[in-house]
Length: 379
Image (cartoon, rainbow, N blue to C red):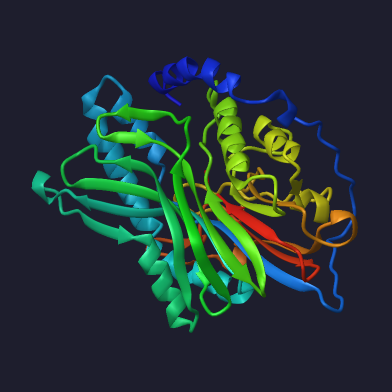
């Protein structure tokens, strides 16, 4: 993270710290090692399957931002052209087919998506033969429809926006897809930007995060479902920023109803963010169902060319509260998807992974009367 962004965060920190309640940082309980995933069946048990998936824009955007923020204007275009080259190698339309296959196999009721991008790069005005027009959401939905699946957009929120050069525009979104044949949505849809964000970092470039939340009915049970993506990075102050964003998220979801949070929270177990969420009564489902297992979900190399997964941290989560079997124990199974060499697909230059993240799929079983809220989030 560059110095200018760090300065803006340092100015923000006293306000952020004042808004995070100490009682949200509950002590963490160490996971037990060697306990297998829990599965359960039973008369009257109703299940919900949820998935969180970071789609990945397809290039190292941070490298472009660093060039834009630097005092040397001569590094801007080279950084952009390098990102365009990687973007071509990671070819989203090809990856969308692999992502659609993941969804078709898991058949989640709800899919929380992060880094759902609309990207336009037209450099013909600069005499360069570059004209790229990508819109991730309709591309993925078309791939799903080709498989006979009827997933619709229940809600979305705009995060990062960028227009640093003429002919270039980027809008980054979080979105919720629902299986329209099994999920009824309404009446409320909320799309909100977090109170605390980094904000403008370069001319035409604004870094912000938020969440989208919907009401839904699944198998006769009412659910609150949200999708979010907390800020990324490890510069000074960013852990506090994520904790503040997480606090706003759990406050919005509320305490009255049982809830599930899914998403890319950009922080590891034991972090301030993790303490905020678990301190609000949520259980980390991977730790509960697969204690001791690594469950890494991030991140592959930017051009997705690595032959074997190099994932080395767990930042994509499913948190649950007030749902499950006896004593609120989460019952079901949890799976990492998109992390095996066989998940790669042929790309324009080399085999590529579906994303730089792995996805998380959770099948949850609970009593028929269980109420639920689901929240989903990227790096």
